[in-house]
Length: 230
Ligand SMILES: NC(=O)c1ccc[n+]([C@@H]2O[C@H](COP(=O)([O-])OP(=O)(O)OC[C@H]3O[C@@H](n4cnc5c(N)ncnc54)[C@H](OP(=O)(O)O)[C@@H]3O)[C@@H](O)[C@H]2O)c1
Image 1 (tube, rainbow, N blue to C red):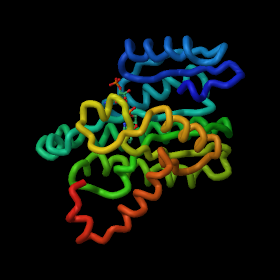
Image 2 (image 1 turned 45 degrees about the vertical axis):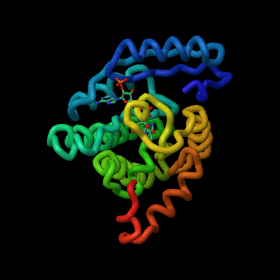
Image 3 (image 1 turned 90 degrees about the horizontal axis):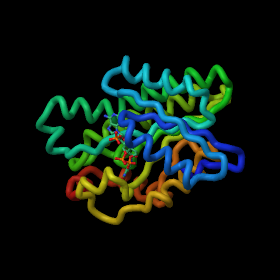
Image 4 (image 1 turned 60 degrees about the vertical axis):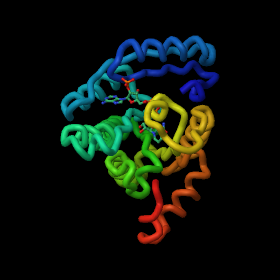
């Protein structure tokens, strides 16, 4: 987020479910951000559509954002969600349904202003279902189709919609998940996101090499794909 500080004083509104975490991030932004950076927090809940709508409405009371970033999500173990109906439902809601609802509510508000950028965190996992994480991937795929349709609906409104598709990145989400392979540095991913949003790119792969990797994975014929342990 610090990468969105500008020479103009920047006001961040941090929205989430844990006050202590939001306070820690806001103090860090003010301490390490540009001169004049301010940060407010808004604590809300995300367990059903009424709570999500109330959380977005409460956040918007702090003012209409120039950039609204929807970045919550969780990476459950596929084996757990495969075996537990409530965990599967939650994985689909937290990674797909609730972010889509946030995006729609933000769009409805920003369209009235005729300006603003909505940035949604999808994932490369949404590009092709894989046995190792198809619940999470399906939710991100829902979000990708939703973002594409919302971007289409936004044409001519002054509002832009960008979907970010990060590859595996070194964050708390992957630290506990036993993710294999090289993890991208969060700052590299952040730099790619900020540049892509400035260009109003509808889909931002971060790091950019994932655009090519996923084009190849999507193009693999079924019998070959079935033999991959991914
Ligand atoms: N890291 C990766 O490799 C990777 C790759 C592709 C896409 N992404 C996506 O990037 C976004 C950011 O993830 P991250 O890597 O920064 O992970 P992170 O550090 O674990 O952040 C996830 C955030 O989502 C919030 N969250 C989780 N479950 C929630 C729930 N039920 N209700 C409300 N908030 C909830 C967490 O809040 P608390 O602090 O309250 O738990 C946390 O702030 C996510 O959408 C993720 O799917 C990440």
